[in-house]
Image 1 (cartoon, rainbow, N blue to C red):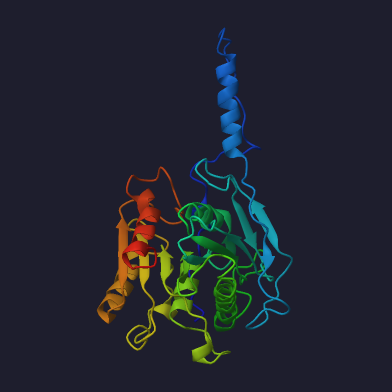
Image 2: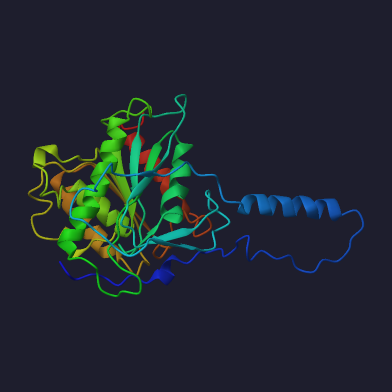
Length: 331
């Protein structure tokens, strides 16, 4: 349980490094009659780069969080340059998270499909890439009639620490408690959020994909009777990190409560190799779990929505929504 891949954070660097702080205009030649066109272009560029006004975040728990106590140093956030394709216009990375929180991107009643998704950003359980692998997809899915709860779950590293702060078995009990609480929030508020409580799923990128799959498998729920464990109705696994605890013999074969699963991965991902995802998919397919796997030739790791990364790669999110339609969650 102590074997953890050392995530290379450089893999998450923005593909289009432009921000309001670094945006500078090159020297311009004067062209009579073209100043208004240049001003319009500049306005559009600045408008696009402005961070979106996100819904307010809320504490995930009332009182003490569930699972083992996780107490790290003061939470910190790094503000990185956002891609020009980012729907949120923001790229924040949170570290040393001891107090989990969530934000909901709610659809209107007129456009609601009844589908809700708990979304777990990645970051190697060291960080939470809240915008690139959270809000950006939440904003996009909102336009598709899907309400998303973006989860800022607890992490397991202190500042400048190469080793995990807590034993992994203890930490993952805390992280899965956060994810299950998020599922409960969507189900409890289903009526006001225009959701069908039987269409609440969980999804995640990279380490967030590990967290989503862990909850889907019903793992690390020793604090609750199995019958009371909140379970997702489906799972979206976006270049998930398949840690050794998820590849153990019998973990799929002896599990009769697996939800439908959607996988997407890039074949050139060197951080979380696609072959593990392929092997896991084979196992759930043989189990008879309704599932779908999308493999892309380009993308690497940490490509989020990644407009401009590849003509087929950037279509993964449309494929995810189409899969929800094919499986009957969207009608």
